Image 1 (cartoon, rainbow, N blue to C red):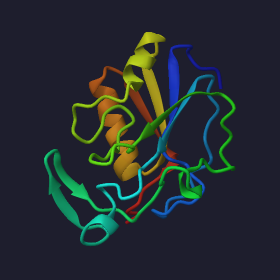
Image 2: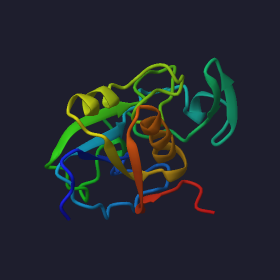
Image 3: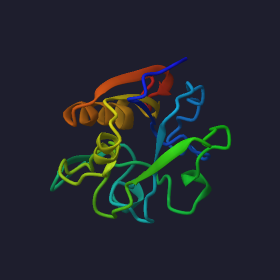
Image 4: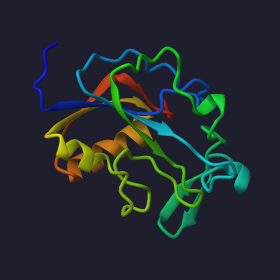
Length: 171
C-alpha cells in the first residue's frame, strides 16, 4: 500500500511479551513507512497497580480523576514490559514510554492521565509534518481510545485499524 508521505502510523499500544492484562493477539499490523511505538513502562509499586491498593479492576479517585486498579503489568525491565518477538519493529522511529511516573497513569500516547503532562509525541509528529495517524494495538477500550481522542485534540486525522486492535473488555 502506498501512503501519503505525511501519514504516520502510531503502532499503538503495548504489544508486549507477557500480556498480564490478557490482550496479546493484535500482531497483524499493516506496513507503514513511518512507525512510532508506545511501551507501558511502570515502576514497581505503580499507583495504578491493584497490589498497591484494594483489588484489581476497582476504581479509586486520584487528584486527576478516577483510576482503575490494574494487575501489576509492564514493570520496567520485566519480560512483561518487553515488546513481543512477534512484533517486527525495524522501522520504528520513536518509542514513547508511558506510565513510568509512579504517581500518575498514562493510557494515551500523547498525554498522561492528568490531561496536562504531554509525552512529546504530538510535537514530534507535527515537527516532521505528519497530519494523520493510524492506531493499532492494545487495548482498544483504554490506550487506543485515549490516544485517538488526544491525537484529534492535537490536530491529527485519526484512523483506528480495528482489525489490529483488541480490547480488555471483549464483551
